[in-house]
Image (cartoon, rainbow, N blue to C red; front, side, top):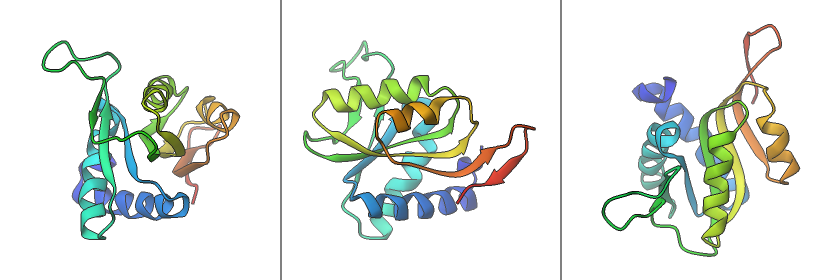
Length: 148
């Protein structure tokens, strides 16, 4: 919900934009519902900071109307991509999005999340050899702590 508030969206997009600078990302996106507010904020932030990055969304299934694409946006094979999510738990929808992006010939060079719930998803990100950036994380007792 933080990403739907103007100040929250601004702060998240600033932090994520800096993280993308470190890995040289050309594009950013994620699963349709989870990433919508983040991608919108990052698109505006990228324009304001004069970054030449593009956003995209990944449907879990191909669309049944229009051209039936699974990825909506301007991905070009060979792009370096940052995958984003609001929270990462097991990462099921995140990994489906990563797999779809990689199937287009792009390289996922970073995963970004607002909150890591510490439920196994990050272990899979690391197993895949992708750098991970988070703003907050859950502690075993359920508290939220700053991770950056």
